Image (cartoon, rainbow, N blue to C red):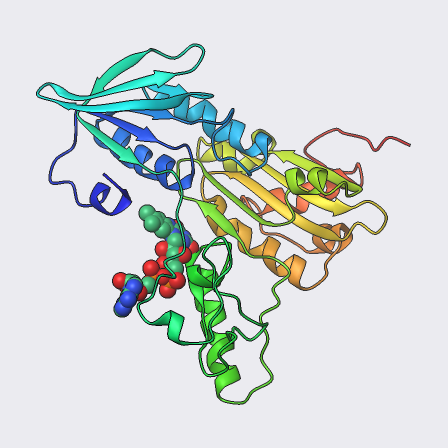
Amino acid sequence: MDSTTGLELPEVPKSLLVIGGGYIGLELGTVYATLGSKVSVVEMTGGLLPGADRDLVAVLQKRLETLFAKIMLNTKVVKVTDQKSGIRVSFEGAGSPSEDVFDRVLVAVGRRPNSKIPGIETTGVKVDASGFIATDAQRRTAEPTIFAIGDVAGEPMLAHKASHEARVAVEAIQGHRAVFEPLAIPAVVFTDPEIAWTGLTEAQAQADGRDVEVAKFPWAAIGRAITIDRPDGLTKLVLDKGTGRILGVGIAGAGAGELIAEGTLAIEMGATADDLRMTIHPHPTLSETLMESADVFFGQSTSVFKPKRK
Ligand SMILES: Cc1cc2nc3c(=O)[nH]c(=O)nc-3n(C[C@H](O)[C@H](O)[C@H](O)COP(=O)(O)OP(=O)(O)OC[C@H]3O[C@@H](n4cnc5c(N)ncnc54)[C@H](O)[C@@H]3O)c2cc1C
């Protein structure tokens, strides 16, 4: 199955193998495991959700290890055979079984832009090597009367990026001075707990060699997380070391997707850690974890004793 057929299943499979530990595989795996399937996940790389910060993924992985039957990392699927008894799958990877049988197999190994539009070759529209249509900042293609938005116009392939681009393109067509230049585009993984991030991730900052400071706040120290029995969370800020400007926000925990919008607004408005900690947040709510992580940056969190090193 792909993700479309995976959402149309008439029955709950007894066992399900998800090939690919990305967001779609983990979301659908969570759905079926919660409905009673015995779900296993196989991922070729060394970790789930490649690209996301490891400390955020760790919060989710801990829970998935109890929800899923098996999580096989550094493991490749080398053969799939349809049999009467089910689908026999062969694996290659240290610590993984050499084969197993499943009722259903979901292939969730990434998505490609669908730019093979019949007749596109008769226009001036340019498609790059990855299949994305090249556009300018108003989403105008190399053929000036054709605009492209959404997955076909580039990463991240997310619905809210698509609709924002559409707004810019329509305004540009109407002659307004519109331009697509977000400082941050939020991403949410709708698992339980959710993982959300916006702006610069710590992993990206490290890869780019950027001098950032990371301030983390564990949810076990916040009242609201305790009262809803979800202390398994983490809120972190990626900050410019010199100015304390907020460059990125990452959250793992129940309802992280609802909380991330504040981080995106903070980045768009050029807010600093000082702005965030001086903004009064309602108590008792999970939103306090954002304010408290800003306090951690200054070594002054009231809930976590972490004095700033001189
Ligand atoms: C399982 C799954 C879960 C996802 N979850 C999320 C999520 O939680 N949040 C999020 O932000 N994003 C999510 N996404 C991504 C999101 O769906 C896409 O980023 C978004 O739909 C992109 O919008 P779009 O308009 O570019 O493409 P689409 O929504 O795919 O729309 C393109 C349309 O064009 C039609 N079409 C294609 N070729 C032709 C043709 N030749 N002629 C006429 N029509 C054509 C297609 O049928 C389709 O209806 C998810 C994707 C998947 C697969």
